[in-house]
Every structure is written in C-alpha cells, then in structure tokens.
Length: 232
Image 1 (cartoon, rainbow, N blue to C red):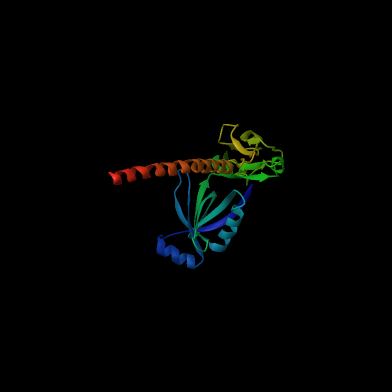
Image 2: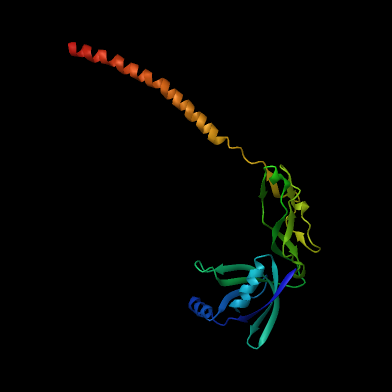
C-alpha cells in the first residue's frame, strides 16, 4: 500500500475570482468530503500537490492529510476522487478528496496492471482487456496500489476471469460474479467484407453489360413507329 502525507489549509473564502488569484499565488483549491462528514473547502501548495498527483497516476494512493484551520490541525485519511485541469496547459486547477475512517472498510477503485505478453499474440491473436480497474472493499491501510493481471499464458480463445486475480489479504472485490471476464485473446477478424463488396460490384457490372443491349434494341424498335406516324 502506498501512503503519502499532504498538508492543506482550510479555505475561508470561495469563488472563481478568489480561486483564480490564489492559483496565481501557487495555491490549488480543493474539497474533502466523506460519508456523514462535513464537506470542507481546502487549498494546497502547488508543488507538493503535483508531486503527489504524479505518484497517484501510477496507482491508488491513500493520503494522510493534515488540514490546518488557523492554529489547529486536523489529521485524516483520504483517497483522490477527482482532478480538474486547465484545457490548454493541462495543469491541475482543482482536486476532490474522499475522507475515510482509518479502521473502517470502504469501497475504492483500484487499477488493473497487465503483466506479460500473451502467447496467443505470437500466433496472430489479439489481446482484449475488458476492464482497466476493479472496485474493492477494504480498510485504508490495506488499499492496494494496483492489482496484477498476468496474461502471459493466454492462447487464442483463452480468457482471464475475476477468479484468476490474486487479491491481497483484507481486500475483496465488490463484484460477486467470479466468472466476469477481464481479458481475452481473440482470433483477428477476417477481412472478408472488402472481397464481398468486390464480388457484388463485379456482378453489378455484368448485369449492366447484359441490360444495355436490350435498351438499345428497344430504341431501335421505337423508330419505325415514329416513321409510320409521319406517313399517316
């Protein structure tokens, strides 16, 4: 389990203009909330927060957070719930944290990390990863950074299911269907469609070549009728 310590300050004022000014000063606004807990507006120093986010991109991280409210500091545990970034620069502009009780179980999304190269790929197969994360239930001190999915033994037509994942002690999946497919190796689809289109096009060309002489013959038959009308 990865755990990082972060310090935040309680925000006394909120609003777009104030947050914009604080960002210029190197502060990033955020909130921390939890089930049955007060939602608190907080802010972080940009550099420590961005360093934490770099680590959080690699897997699930539990944060030991100290929120300073004046002279007092309240310590709590939380997981990153959501980040907002600037559309042009890509820099973080806001973060949401979900507060959890240290000894109490909660649900959290944990990424799946694919390990190995499926033998079926060497045989021309295609690996399909059905899901990239799993929701698990555990206490904050047992949250895994990631779950491993070893696909090395998969041949064409083989698949891995929820029952094939090794969960650490104290971690259980919220999904109860152990037959749920997580990854599979398929035979690549045959490119039969273009050939079929060519055949249809060829048939159409043959029909047209047969139909054209008939149309010409009909026109030849029409000419005598017009001439007979003139004679009348």
